[in-house]
Length: 86
Image (cartoon, rainbow, N blue to C red):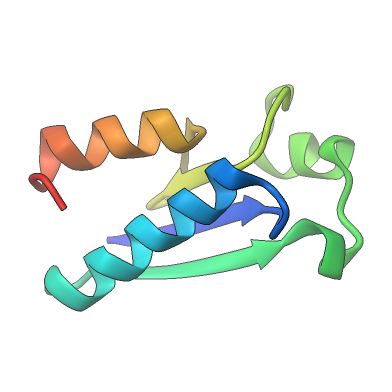
C-alpha cells in the first residue's frame, strides 16, 4: 500500500496523519508512505486540488494507492476498517 500525505507541519491533523503513517510503516508489511510538506514545496490548496482532481477545503489530504480518500479522519477510518487499530 502506497500512501501520500499532503500537509503542513503546523497543522495538528497533518501531524496526526503523519504519526499514524509512521506507526503503520513500522507494523504493517508492504505499507509505504510519503509526506509532502506543502509549505516547503510551495504548494497551495489550488495546486493540491489540481493534483487530486477535486476541491480541497482542508489539509491533510491523503491519497492511498492513487485514490484520494480525504483528510485525517477519513484516513483513520480507512485504516481501522481495512488494516486494524494502530
